[in-house]
Amino acid sequence: MKEPEFQVNESLMLTREEEEILSGKHGEAKAKALEVIIRVAESLDAKRLVRIKHAHISGVSYGTIGEPGLAFIKELSSLGAKVSVPSSLNPIGFDESNPFDQEVLYITQDFYRGQMEILENLKKMGIDLLLTCTPYYTTIFRKYGLRSGDHVAWGESSAVAYANSFLGLRTNREGGPLALMAAIAGRTYYYGMHIRENRVPRVKYVVDLNGLGYNEVTLSLVAEYIASIHEDESPPLLHLDPRNINETTKREIAATLGAAGNIAMIAIPGITKEAEQADIRKTIRIKNNIIIARYKELAQDQGIDPDYYFIGCPHTSEEELEILSKIKSGDKLIVTLSRDVYSRRKDLVQKLVDKGATVLRSTCLIVSNLRSKNIMIATNSYKAYFYLTRKGINVSLIDIKSMIERLGG
Ligand code: F3S
Image (cartoon, rainbow, N blue to C red; front, side):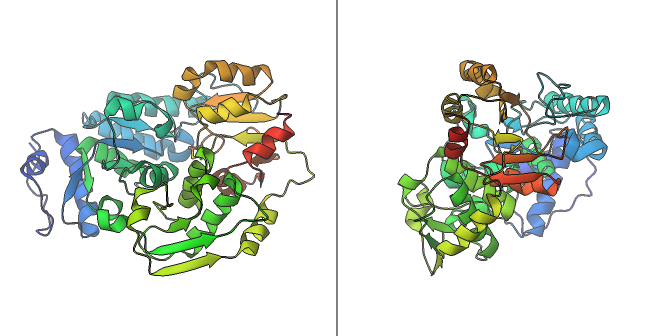
């Protein structure tokens, strides 16, 4: 049994079951996980905890967390930690089907050992090795009966913004370890995006992209701008004709909000339920020329031939595989996707591979090691731009439609 010294702030209401967990009745690991959630709840002045239906755990690449992260996971595992709710994992540091292929990525034996130990220990806890940052493109909704309005604890910022904005799920931006604690405890702190009123937008952004067009790149630059100026605690409302937004655009907007700022949700009329309940107190018009100038700055490869074209940050959807499969030459194309989408659409993957494309599953160019840094990558992902440029790689933005045209599609 757990020692009784753990004190809980009186302003935090715990249920009888939570008291029991804390007492150690459900095991030491679950008690410890709940203690962490409680400390976070207290620091935020949350009044209670909330049960979650799913957790998605990020920060599991050995390249990102290294030996300290592995040691933390091993220690939890040695306490007999098990997840209390269905839980899934973000991408790892290599393509699991071909870890040592060095054409694009590069790992050492030590990296491989560390990554496999991380996976082994997390699997022992009962976590589904989904290995993707787009759990929403997999079968988890059907499998676990997730529905709009459900509380979850997700730790991948792009998936968090997507879940809140486009799926109606409720989650804060959790750090990877905290999402893991929530998975073990089966609950998280009732705060932020879990509370209905906090999801009601109060600031409206209006943008007119005539002259530039609406696609995942231009709208990501809008999202980047919003992330840089949005100060209100409520989610921003982006006033746009929903016909100007497709699936790729939604995903890239969400990823941009996560990379460029700290925003966990955006509301778009006709797409996001909470947009209908908006209580707008301020309207900000985004000047077209700001986005045009930024576009010119980041779409640097005009006239230059990149070494690679990259699609799949966040991981590619089936629909994108469909349109990509129409290209003539894939010699320069790298696609990253989940093992789930891979196995469902092996036919399309094969078409791409036959055309010379490199298709990597369960990883991405950011959480792995690129073999060479002296390269130029053209991608439709602002998030990839954001992180790859920080690794010293030249990156330019290009929307998927233009990319396909260049590749002969
Ligand atoms: Fe996913 Fe890697 Fe981008 S984990 S969101 S593809 S940085």
